[in-house]
Length: 166
Image 1 (cartoon, rainbow, N blue to C red):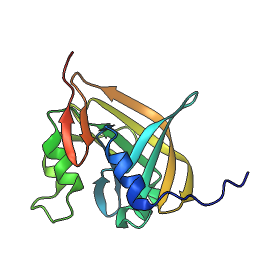
Image 2 (cartoon, one colour):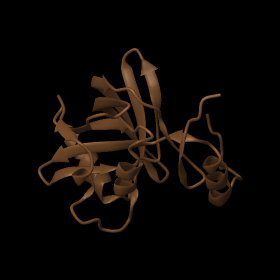
Image 3 (cartoon, rainbow, N blue to C red):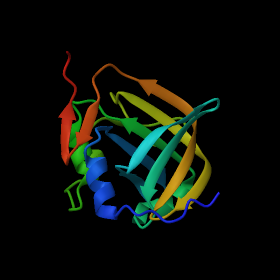
Image 4 (cartoon, rainbow, N blue to C red):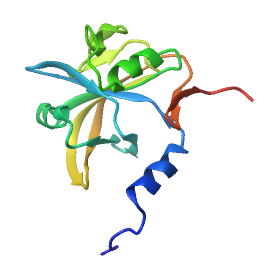
């Protein structure tokens, strides 16, 4: 089915998406060059049978090729108390000590770095990878998971946000 080209501009699309609150997560992995991680463009559940996540990453990022090559990664959904960790992974400037110097990290079952105390951590093996436009879409087959108490850290309109009870 050919859906044709969109008439929506990139700026319009980005502006509309900034109005949508998203859970903040880090994608982390380890290869011969060491630990690496990033804050992905988008993450969501793809299927429950088998348990699979979709992770969308800009393909021009230097870590994107490394991630595709290593084939395993962890998705760490952050609690509202972990905004400092999110900032370390999302900044474009060099931070002394690197992003893994904040938080309590351990090597998970797949070898990927997992953040202790993350709301939910999913260790995945890349089942399939697709290129679409500016991004890689990775289907991550969940190999292991951990959960901890807490509330989601959200991102909306350029700011980290917290949930408030009604």
